[in-house]
Amino acid sequence: MTDATSTSKDTANAYASKVAMSAVESLNFEATSLIQYGSRGRVAVIGPMEAQEFASRLTGNLRAQVILTDGAVEPGVPTVPVGNRRLQIEGYLGNFNILLGEEGKANFEKVSVDLIVDLSAEPLLTMPLKPPGYFTSIMEEPYLTLVEEELKGLTGTFEKPKYFNYDASICAHGRSGIAGCTSCIDACPAEAITSLIETVEVSPNLCQGGGVCASVCPTGAIRYVYPNVTDTLRMVRTLLTSYREAGGSDPVIAFMADADSDMLDNKPDNLLVAVVEELASIGMEVWLSARLMVQKVSY
Image 1 (tube, rainbow, N blue to C red):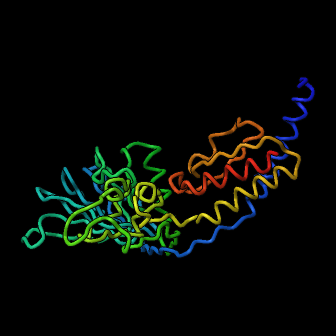
Image 2: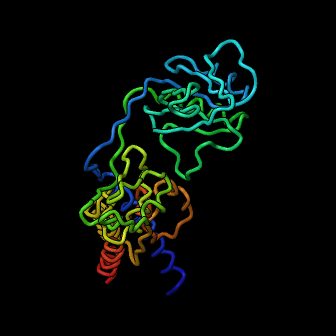
């Protein structure tokens, strides 16, 4: 192939790639069901004395209180000292409970809020994927300003897709009181899956679509459903057919998570990027079908 021919081919592929990516942008993927959150703007700022200063910045629709882990209470924002009590956090956006002390004891206290800003030196929640509505930050600018701006948009009602379906009838977690498979529980980075002895329970409000649960489930009891297989393959088919019709050749499909989709600024002209919510949502059936589609349009 001469340099001129190669250049012409690259130019054609670059144009066809743009056409294909534009065609995909017009596709709509409908969630099978939606999970709803409601926030009234009640914010708990957890941390030492400096947390009181940050809490005083939260105005308008945000109503802040401080859960003081160290130092003296200062006038201004309502403050609850932790003292020597154990601090636990449960919940998600619009439905957080901060538990101080031991339930049933005289010093027990429960604080219910919609949002949490954790300014502790080390986050109190350690799971890789934190619950929606839970923010961490070091006590320096511009990090505090970024958190403040995010909080301002978190009052009202919000929706997100339900990412999974769970079929308890084929779950291998337990039978007759005997513990079995714990693969999904161990793998979930959001700690959204808990044991019910015979089966498991997946919290749709904590689940953030990581998809690894579906990848490690040996029976298919947990399946990733947003986007579903049909919609994902429709996206791949649209990419390939639009690319070929626009004069492109030798297509290569790359699946990429939405959070990483801006990392291929200098991608090859024949590389078509299929952006999905999470890479773990791409199962073997999608890989094999996509490969067959690529082979079909390549000949």
